[in-house]
Image (cartoon, rainbow, N blue to C red):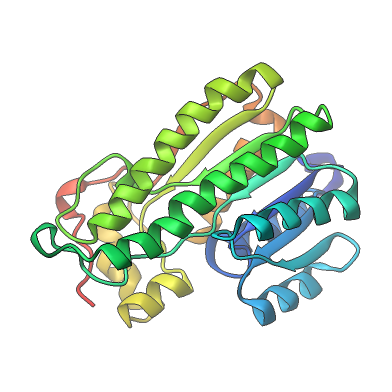
Length: 265
């Protein structure tokens, strides 16, 4: 646990979408250890409730939320305000990966629309309602979105996912300009490949296999873990980054794009 002298989020209230597993889970734990009250939002009810219980009911709550549903996002923020009185940090992290490989000449529009409903529409809704709560309560808060190393490069596979992460980066850069006048910072974190449960399930590979597969994409030795991304999110959520706005913080060990080839399913 973080000592009281080093707690960077003492007294803050945070929402973490996609918070029941992977990067979201690790970030929820980091937020709590730094003194924040945390609302975990996810569609994975059992995992979310178990995580909230393990962190502690006095400082953590689980709320079911499908971010593609505007009413559920609005309700999530309203419930957070009712529980804790304010919202300081919105970590819009929920996302999905491509369900098909997506060849341009044979583009699956239905799959694209399902993915964009979560990765783009859901992200925009979380920014919208998180920002409204901050503006209405005169909170100079922090909004962080999860983008990807695919937000700045092209890909010859899974192009709907790549498109969605480019859209997240555009959202962050635009929202940061509008919300800066209210003292609200909007940034994103762009992880490299992390062996989260979603990634492992998507490709049918073990955590160790995924890590071995993507290790060459980093210029640093070692393996990118969820904790590395979570630490970057804590930085963007805290006063350590009080004059950082509209920034895309890459957490990928120094990406080597020539080695970036997603595994076949």
